[in-house]
Image 1: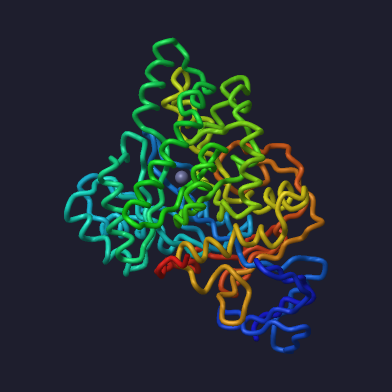
Image 2 (image 1 turned 180 degrees about the vertical axis):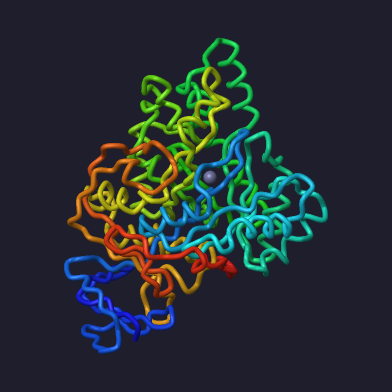
Length: 456
Ligand SMILES: [Zn+2]
C-alpha cells in the first residue's frame, strides 16, 4: 500500500465505524480494523472523520455572465474546492448560439484540462436547440456528459416549454437526465420592468423581482412536462418551501424528480439584501434568498429525503464586478462564492444543530451526487472506489473570512461566522492535495471524468 489512514472514524452514507483505510494506485484497496505496511505512508486520523470527498455538482468557474466573467478560473476554483474537502466538481459546458454541443464541450475542456487539481465533469447547457443539436444528444451522453441543464429564464440562455419537453424526451430515451433552472421568465420580466419604472433599482429589489411563487410555478411546470413524457428531472438550486411542495407532490405521484439545494438557501435570508452601502449586492444570485421559514422547510426536506443533493452553485464575483449593477439591480452579476464552505457549513449548522445526521450529510454531499451524476467509482469509501477522501476534524473551530478562504473574491456571505468542524486533509485518487492548511496538489493531476449514466 502507498498510504494508510489510521485510527479514523470512517463515515459513509450508511455507516460510522472505526477503521484504517489503505490506498494504492489511486484506489481504496483495504478497509479493516488494523492495517500495517512498513512501505506505506501513514496519516494518523485519531479523533477525526474519514469521509468520501465531496462531489459538488453545481459549480461555475470562469463563467461569462452579464458582461464579466466569474472570478475563479479552473485552477483557483479547484484549489479552493480542495481546501473545502471537495474532490470532484461538475461544471457546465454552456452552448453558445450556433455552436454544436460537441464543440461546447471541447471548448470548455480546453479551458480546464491541465488546470485542475481535482477531477471534474461537465453538465451540458443547451441554449440553441436546433434539429441537429437535438440529434447530438445520444452521442454526448455516451461520450461522458449524461446530464443537461436547461434554463427556464435568463435572456441569453432561456428555452421555451416545447424545447424543454423535447429535450427531456430525447435525453430520457438515451438514459440521461435533464436539470432545470426553474423560474418563470415572463413574470420576472414583467415584475422587473414594473420595479425599474418605479425607480426601485437597489439590490433588495432583485429578490422582489423573482418571488418564490415564480420559482414554484416553473418547478411545477417542469415536473408536469417531464411526467408527461415519462422523463426524469433534476431541479437545480431549489430555494423555497413552495417549490419544495411541488417536488414533494411530484415524488408522491411516483414521479422521479430529484432536487438540489445550496447552503445559502438553508442559512441566509432576503434580509441580507438590505446590507448598507450596496452590500446587498454580495447576495444577488438567482433564484434569490428567501425567508427563515423557507430555510427550515429546506432543512426538513433534506432530512426527510425530498431533497437529495446539496451543491454550492459557486459563482464568485468581486465587489468591483458587482458594481456593474450600481443603480440597476438587473446588471449585478448573479452569483456568490461557496465551493470551499459547503462542508463546514453543513456540518456546523446542519449536523451539530441536529438538523441532519452525519451520515445524511455524507449522502447529500457525496453519495447521492455520485449516483445521480453517473460517477460509479466515487461517492463512498469501499474497496475498489477511487481514493477521493476528506479527513475532517470535528473539533477544529474556524471563523470564516474571505481573507483566509481561497476563493478569488473579496467577500464571503458568511464573513465572521464561527463554524465548528473543518476539513484538514484532502486526498484525490490517492494523492494528498491539502494537508494541514497547505496545498500540496498540482494542476495536472485532475482529470475530466467521462461520466456514466445516472443511477436513480
Ligand atoms: Zn448555477
